[in-house]
Length: 461
Image (spheres, rainbow, N blue to C red):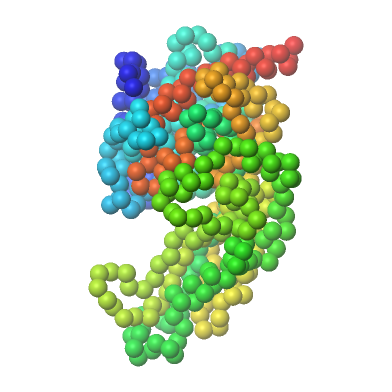
C-alpha cells in the first residue's frame, strides 16, 4: 500500500515499541517491561496528553494519561496493556519475535507487521494514541479522554483492581473503550459483545521420593505421569463435555433465537480448518464450531511435563508430573466456584498411590455488553462510516477478566472495538497485525468519539 509520510512515521514508532521485550510473566524482563511503560508514557505526552503519570504497583507500572477539555463533556476511558506473552517456542518464528518486520500474506496483501505484541496489544494500544494525536491536531475531539495502560494483563492483572478501587474519582468516565479483541474479517467488521471468563489451574502429582529405574520399579509403583494423564482424561466425557460435578449448574443457556442470529454470522468452516492446519474440528456435541468457541465453557490442557525430555533415552519413573489447565467460562459461572469444583474433582480422581496438589493461579468473570447502549450505537456508527458495512455483534471466546471488574467498581459499560483477525496468531509464534487493520483502527476510533459525543449530547438535551 502507498503510505503517506505520516503513516510511515507511525509504523516506525510502532516498530520501536515492538522491539521492547515486555514479557510480564518472566522476571528476567522486568527492566524491559518498565522500559515499555516509559515508552507509553512518552508516546501519550507526544500525542498531546496534558498529564501522564507512571504509577508503580507491587508488580509492573500502570501508565495513566488524560486530555481534559471540559468537565461538562462526556469522558472516554481507554484501557489497554503494554505487556506481551512469552514468544516461546522461539524456533517456530520465521523472524525474531522482537525484531519487527513487514511481510505480505494472503489475508494481508498490503502487508502486516510480524512481532510479539504486534496485535495483542501494543499495536491496538498505539492505534488509540495516534487517533488521539490526530483528533487533537485537527481539533475534532469533543470529549475528555483518559488512558489507563497496564503491564500485567498477560499475567492476570493482579494489581489493577486495587488501583481502580483507590482511584475511582480519577477514573470517572461515561464509557470504557478497549481494543484487545478482533473482528470477523476485513470485509465484515464486528463488535465483541461478550467475553468468556477464565479459571487457570495447575496440577502437581507426586509419587516416589525420587526418579526410579523403570526396570526395577516399573509395574510396582504408580507413575505420576500415567496418573496425571488418567486424571486429565476423566475431566471430559465422550461428548467432550467437562466432567466436573456442578460445572454446568449456572451456565446461562442461549435462546434458540440468539443461536439463530449467531448462525447468520459469516463463518468459513473450511477456511477455519485450513488456517490452522487441521482436518476436522472437535468439541462439545450439539453445538457448532462458532458456538463452541464463544458461548460454551471449555477445559483445555495448556502444558504438561515431567520425567526425562532430553535427547536420547533415559528409562525412569519420575517423582513428579505437572499440568497447567485453563477453563473458559460463560455467564453465569463464577470462576472461584469453578476453581473449587475443579480442585475437588481432581482430588477425588487421584488414587492413594500418589499425592496431588492443585493450585489456582488466576481467573476472571464472563462479560456481556448490551447492544442497546449509547456506546454500542456509537461503535456501530463508527465502523459503518469507515468500512462502509454495518458491523455485527459477536461474542468472543477469549477472556479479559478486568472488564467485569471495571463495571463493578466504576459503574460503566465497556465497548470492545477490536481490529485484529483470528489468524493474526496472537499468543503464538509469528504474531502479526495487518497495516490495513492498523490504519482502519486509527480512522475508526475518532468516529467513535464523534458519535459518542453526539449521542450523549442528544441524550442530555
